[in-house]
Length: 143
Image (cartoon, rainbow, N blue to C red; front, side, top):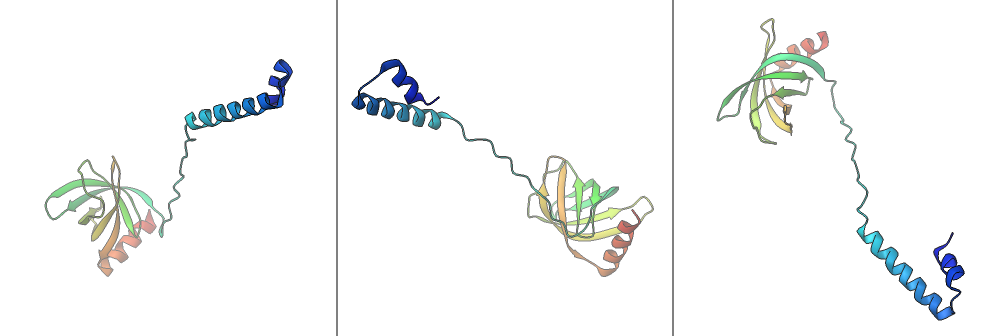
């Protein structure tokens, strides 16, 4: 039921009083709307990747230019790697990475940090030799 109709039924008021009541109701509604918090908006991030990631557990050596860090690769693709590390490495930083498989295969490349999370960093491969790139692609294909 409309609020004005309800009030009219209770009060049976004059037209001027009706206008005052309407103004009061509108003011109250505007005030209550101002107090209502905006709805929470959750953005859904859909990752667009050039290559499919594969889960791995590889030893990783990171060289930041200032420090050498031992870490683990958690997933790998032809264009990037997620490296589990507790060290703070800045977003956008270029770093050298060497991955070592259990069989002794080694892949080295220069990468850029494109994601920083509590568990580690996501890097995009920037520079890799053609032989390392080919061997990395073959390694990923076998996973």
